[in-house]
Image (tube, rainbow, N blue to C red; front, side):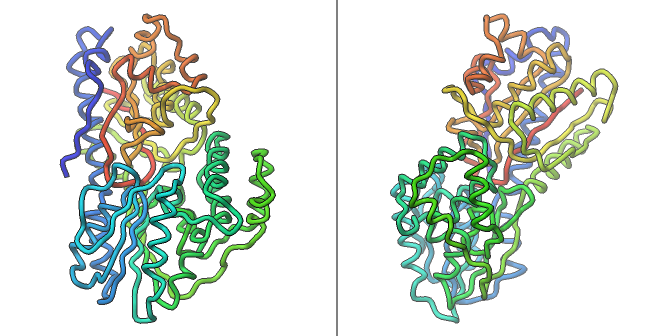
Length: 440
């Protein structure tokens, strides 16, 4: 895959301000960071991961393919090319702009993310029709990636699309994590929380999963449409109370209906996750001569807090050589959350990067990078951001305060001003976020 990664115009030149005599070092750092990002993303592309699983696990000759999520097109394309005539019919449901053209024998739909829309319901209804008359001899190859919760949706009785959208918006804006969000959404849907698997019976289901959920809980990826649901209505109500959600009586009634706890005829395999993403970045940077440590693959706090924490570690490296002596790379994986208070433009990776900038202000030969593996960070066209020891001073020189940008959730604007946005375009995969400190 030729994955292009581009900064805003002037990014390299701006990031060199204040580092006279260290231009070459800074250029090397940025180049190494971008190559590590590219290598890591390519390592979890479906072309490799799906085929590896199919070679090990899938022998059926009567296969129906359903692929959902941001990586759905690539997963389906790989499966079709590998399985050939064994695939009798298939369907792809992915995010707008993520389809890359026709796939022989498959219908392709694009729909709304992170909020479901009418196309989500239309595509899901057609998917249910596609599997409604399968026999015990049939196998549904269910290819699941992050984003499936929004893209694969049919509201439960008494619940409307507007209801689901309103609840999802409330959960996103209050900083709920993905497990909490999906615990609620499972109960507002006819396909989530194992309900799709009930529809497929008596056919069996084999799922291949690209996980965007920390801890890789298969019942949580895409809200677990083909897995028994271990969460309870009581837990869902506790989430409602925790975030003081404003819900209609019909929604509360739907939340009280329990989800399936046992499903026959299901099997699955994990094809990729954030741990494999971080390991690939670590291997690449190790070969480049960096001392490398993966500090965590469970980063899940507020993005601003994560950025401050990561910035403080960069400072520790520069002041005391802990946890590693330069040249070094400290790698973090996970999915921080953003509590929306302002009306600015940005995403969790951009907010994380910007929050690190004040902590590393004045540090030479040091950068912090954070990107979403799917290539989209929040409602923007950027994958994430990069900052260095000159970022905060540069913005101060423009009369801008980083604290004001963060308070307004406007990290994208700030990074745009200093040339710190990273754009990859849709990558075709989705396994959470990659953040890095690089020090020379």
